[in-house]
Image 1: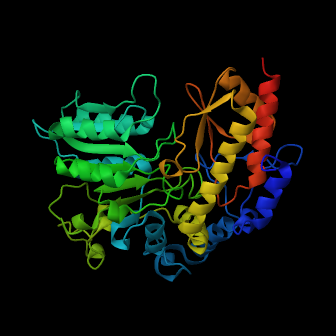
Image 2: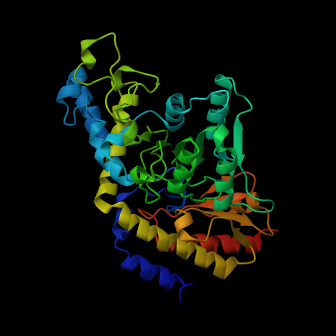
Image 3: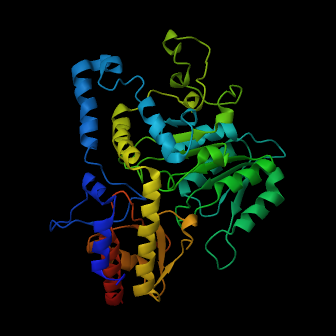
Length: 421
């Protein structure tokens, strides 16, 4: 029976990616049992090889000092380049379009410095009404900085609905696009888990003369992306969620190839974005590198890059095709169990169509107080994510989560719903 533990065990036994679970550290409870960890959408688990990768750089620092920039096993001077090809494959981009640098909100500001160019007639920025708070803060501060504090436009669901309808997005861009300088959308939306058709949004926006950017904090390493073909202008993402690079780790960004040689585009500059052949010539005139690398500012933190490299090597071994396939199956199993056992207790606000979501399901409780139940399942060893005002986010990451993880979570949730007043 599909709703039995035996079924979950059988699926795990047949899972071609099941062995990768052993390559990650899974947190333990005080009693020694493993946590049911379903929070990769907030912080991914640590690959066991990460310690080795970081230790290599610590050893080289100890042994070489500054000479490690050239003589380390993985020379620090070009270290970020070791990550480019693998990161580009994860997001469906060309290597020239991708660079690992800075952190997410920093990259969004740097990219808006280039791609948000307001005029008195075209100055608005379009976001989702429930965009991640940091995105909203970044956008609002850019608007104020440029002197357009009233320039925020929001995509809002219809009354009594939670998700955005594609036709409403199209209508908003069509009717107000002449005043929109930039469209900046989170994909998936962090709260609902809704995935948007970014290729369609890019086409709609470009037809109205808008620049289009995407925040992929919850998309990179989760969705099967084709950024180059989508034709968006830029994207930015963190690496500590589905990409398992460690808390607060360095992020990455995408700038479409058509902008690679647009050296007249305004940008904030730093020496690491300068032509590599003359970077150490200490020239006065800034000469940007072709492609996304030209938006770099400073030499990157090597220890953080080492942690990212460890995870990217695993992703490259597995491939996004297999991860995407398992993700659909694993999240579909979670959806099935919730429907089977808790149909009248839990509402899934994430889209039902697998093409309109990643691995995350956002749950709202129908008859019980969500925060109280969340605290109860946490005490039972479930590590998930609570988001105000009333959503429990569950994200079975296909790289290390199992069918049994999903089954145990649903059983614990069911028991606590039965016990909670």
